[in-house]
Length: 447
Image (cartoon, rainbow, N blue to C red):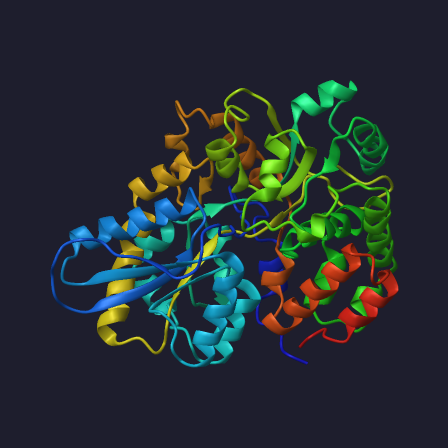
């Protein structure tokens, strides 16, 4: 059994009692392999940086790198963009071959743990000790998923983005109903929306991790964070917990009731097609990451600006033991430094971390995408923002959540995460049932 290298306290309490501690990985939209560099000459070493290609997030990442390059012509960063799934495959292969980019962007948690165990990322603990001002500028809760065996291997960066239940106010007006306040309400709304030719929920099921967000909430709302914590702690047959089986059964009940857009298993989140179904009125609701607010604002015409988008935390489940104030997602995004990089490249990366990554300008730009940065003091940029209501909503979720549970596929090892995503896809396609799902997942506990 693999030792659990992220502490129980860090995992379960990423934001317990701390302000603003939350986030979920963003997903890419444009094709892999496009390269971005900042113009101008200058010699010296260069550091490589791979990151996701979604907009508007990609633009912030690119401009942050460009500002650094303009200020450091003799030690630049060269960036390459990838779609979400392509990035996951490429980075895993590159790290395994000892050919990782200088700056390794990621989600922390189980993936970072595997890099640490393979000796592929730099221990940044002493660097943070020597640069206390850098560490102090970031929310303490964001360091949980950056820490392995008490040592820090990544800098928290970018934004906190809990998973949100979005809804189209226009759709609810058409059926004369209010947003769901319980699981029972969700099930009652399904036939009403279907009768009007509106899909109850949009879902980019081909991407698999989008399906996972539903299970994260069902497990938490029904049994509290302890249910998945048992999996994380590698307890034998943890997936066979009666609460887990009940949650999986409820999930399939919703699918069988036509709760999702027809053909959801062929819809990809990388293309933002799931978001488009919501803002074009084809679906009434969507459970998705906080980053999708920016995408819908950018691509959805007047859907957001016209006040048609509603949002809320996932509702409680009738009879459930979980705290409805809890949330799920990731506490931030993360940047590590490849252990294989040269001394010069490592210094460029560390300078990038200490300057532009945590700069006020970067924080302001992240707020401009409709997201809350992990950088302290970012609230000053909310004033006058047309997204202030959503930003304060995110802050409220982060502040009120007793537990902010990290996304499952990032908390687990890459091996277990791949089996998880594969079985979630099968569960949503109704090709396996709850018991078979639990059996398959119990086989990889602790691996």
